[in-house]
Image (tube, rainbow, N blue to C red; front, side, top):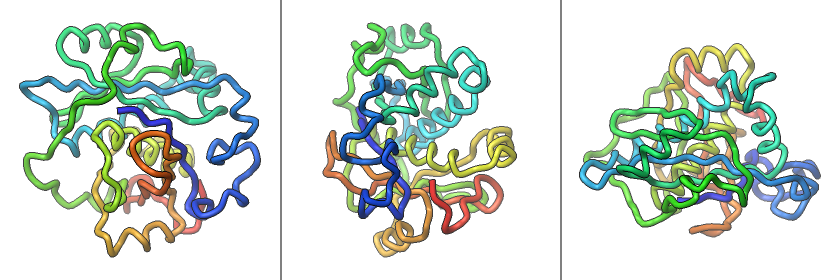
Length: 258
């Protein structure tokens, strides 16, 4: 359930030549690699007897990323602000681990934020050094659990953004949760302060859905934010998520770059 992924705007997906030299989205080594490296930990509660629905877990993970990005402790002079800046100044990494029972209770005791969906619970923590995880998080598993939807997800709400998944890329639930978090973060970076405030006050409504194959290509060429996985875990490098805005929340004008 790990994701040492990179995200980049659509028009940089085919070539790194257009990406600024200090961008965290370049595949080759840059000055960002010289900075201390951090990772944003997310822990999903997955009990054996009652695992969450897959789509709900993906959407809850995406909202968890938005919640911590917008938390007062993570901005301005907040207590997490410096480590959040350090994390975003280096390579942007997210790792999703799973917990149940006593593991989940120990994770809940650590400083962080729990975000609840219909059936899913995801706790997000301030970034930690890549090689300096708290022991109660480091011991959690990053693989071995798959999630399913008991029934097909409903059509997404057109008023809220949709994180469209590449229909030709097969990923574990944890990997996909991290990718959805990347897509949500790219959408967040697109918005004005006013748009961010409105989206946050509404509870960050969003959907995560698998795109139809005939729509995926046009989505990647529409000027919308695109997640491009670096290919470090599970899958080959390539595009995994497109963030499309809604009619009311999180508008993402075509042609803008993340």
